[in-house]
Length: 339
Image (cartoon, rainbow, N blue to C red; front, top):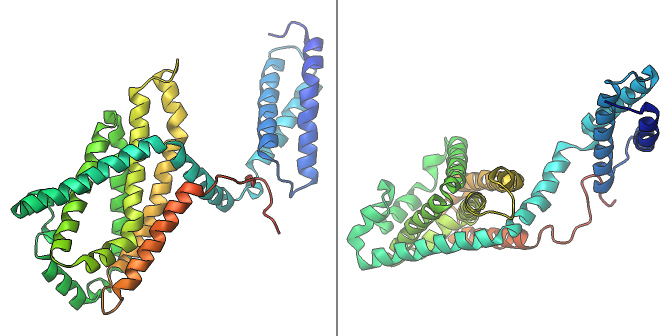
């Protein structure tokens, strides 16, 4: 309850006037783009106006003051909700180009642990198969990978991708949804304090290592690289980034951060988790398209050198993007791009 209404109005008037000036400026210049700091200040002013209106409503205030504050709020929310000021495409482009790689680098410690667990699995899988080739059904566990690599290569090259001619779109959609589910599962395993995420990454590394060793031992290294690199150069890093998100979740559950309770820690990582898994989904959509429409074609339809080169360019580009994108940028969401 307001004790001294006149003093309250006098104290709050400066922020009301500032809010009104900002609104006048935005309405007079339809193409105006606020900076991040200006947008944050405007949001703060609207919150203050809303709080002041709530207090005014509990007092016997002049109806003109109440109407004035209601007008400010109405105008303010109209500006906030005006979609033309910040197109969805612009927001998504900014998020993908800057926010996503920045988030990956911010949790680089978790990513290092992910890489260690995965490649430990790769080496273990290859070494185990080298010691005991008869253990292949146990280690790999997928029926379509149980046969001779040379026979598989001969069959694939004979088909020349014709087995997918009538179902590329369906196959691509299946790959996208399946891999996204696997990624979300990998993140969700972070609820086991990250232990499940580590085990899942190690297990996937074991399978990759065993399959890779099997094909290399059979002299089919070129086919293996041409088969895996085009889509695997995106798909495998995407799974690793999902594992990174799982470890970030596990770390928040397991370790205290100063005086922050569990709820505060979860709230602090919420945006980063959404950013990581959202970026992973985008990567997997692209990987699914590449696998269905490119990876499944082998020599003589597509030379292996072309497929391997494509995959290497993708992998190097992805690493460079995650390492350097967004390090030094001055473009904010509300600024105009240079002409």
